[in-house]
Image (cartoon, rainbow, N blue to C red; front, side, top):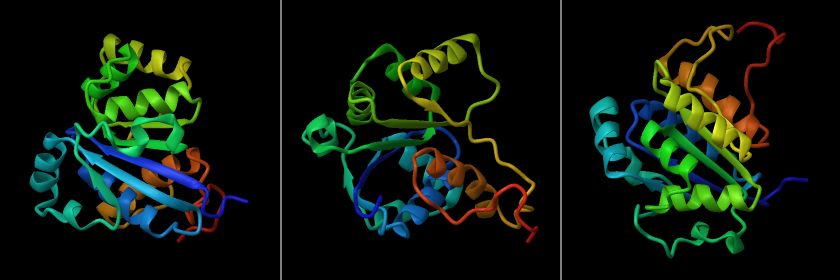
Length: 192
């Protein structure tokens, strides 16, 4: 049973796609029967992009503890805290590259390094396009290390009616990959 055992790190980087982070945080807030704790870390660029794209600072009002990007005393900076899932949403190519190279120069990359070394779930919701060979090689390295690359490529077969519905098609997939049970459209389900 998964009740109250999952501890999740959410990192938000400065890549475009703040709506994905917003929807992810909203959905995690509804999964308190499966998630014991959520720790949030955002880069300065992530906050700037959120304000630009979404026109607000609602990230300040999430119901989770937020950590500064250089807070190496955050519990998930160590494997002993037993955070078992990390989702980077959206994940910039710079963050991807630092993780692939093992460079732990901030809390996001340190937490990702911890999750990989402990053989836990690391999901990177990359949102750039197109990918260069460097990006693809970094994705390959992270995949070989046990991470999961989940491109922020929405699906349309559920006939999403809003930008949030569209973003949810990717977020639901990431939550599925994390092993969490979410109420989401499934292929073969009756259309809405």
